[in-house]
Every structure is written in structure tokens, then in C-alpha cells.
Image (cartoon, rainbow, N blue to C red; front, top):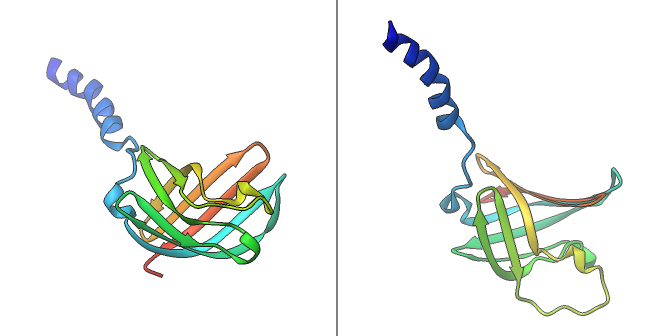
Amino acid sequence: MKMRKIWVLLLPVLCFLGCAEEGMDAPNLQGSFTGTFERVVDGTSLGQAGVSLVLDGDTFSGSGGPNRYPVICRGNFTLEGNTMNFINNCFFTADFDWTLILSGSFEVRQTGNELVLVKRRGSIVDTYRLRKGG
């Protein structure tokens, strides 16, 4: 009877630990992705643009939409749990919105072949919705 009580108490704990969300699996994030970028400000979309992103080892490269909406270029990234930190190594001129450069920390989630990167800054939300191999 004591053993049964122990299992009744221990089973939910084991399930919680086994089911807890882990960080992203870096090898699954390697490859070529295509999709869209969208910026939402105060709940209003500023539009979507087609983008491409290549993740290779700890480096990234890619291209954004027209009129530098957004700018991807190239650089390095690290993965810490469910956060990707991008460091862009390109040189940029001062004639556009630098917040559109792929850099800084993004929440990341991957479901199958879909990779979603989200960055929130106050009322601004940038979202990359990407598909692997597309």
C-alpha cells in the first residue's frame, strides 16, 4: 500500500519532468528556409515580405524583401533554450530603419518543417514564418 502511495505522488512529478518543454534542437535548425516576414505595430500589420534564411553551423545568411523590409544579410547566431540570438556582421548605411535588420534575440519554435521567430519590443512585433527546404 505504501508503494502505491509513493507511485501516486511520484508519477505526476515524473510526467511533468518528462513533458516539460526543452530547448530547441540545434541540428534540426540547420538548412535553408523560405517564408515571410511581418511587422505588427500597435496591432496593425505593416505588410508581409518574402524572405530566405540559411542556417549553417553557427552562421546565418539570407535575403529580405524589397526596400530592406527586412534586412537579413549574414552573421552568427547562438541558441539558448528557445531563444536565438543573432549577431549581424554586415555593414549598413544610415538611410533606413535599423530595427528591420535581423539581429538580437528572438523567441523560436519549430513544428515539423515550420520555423517561427518572434521579436517583441513594446508595441512592435516582428515575426518570421519560415519553411525548411522551401
